[in-house]
Length: 87
Image (tube, rainbow, N blue to C red):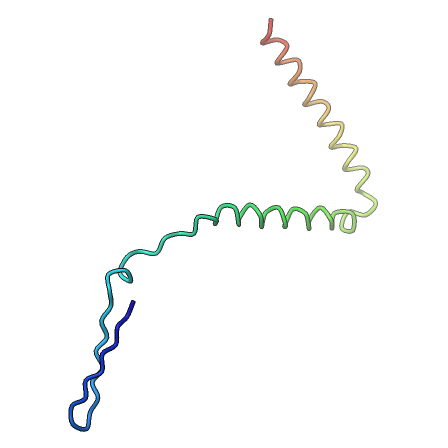
């Protein structure tokens, strides 16, 4: 908080400004900055997902088929690993 004091001296006006300690303290970071970042990331991903069919066009089914095949292979490997741990 800044306090301004005016002193009249003849033909001149002198201004004195005094600051309190609260202005000298470092500013605190907003607590919601992490949630804002996550929200912005989700919005970005939604836009990218919405534009994917337009950008990829005819290649989209081929890419999705390959992703599904790779995902099923990885899932099978994880199941084999976990069942090996259970023995």
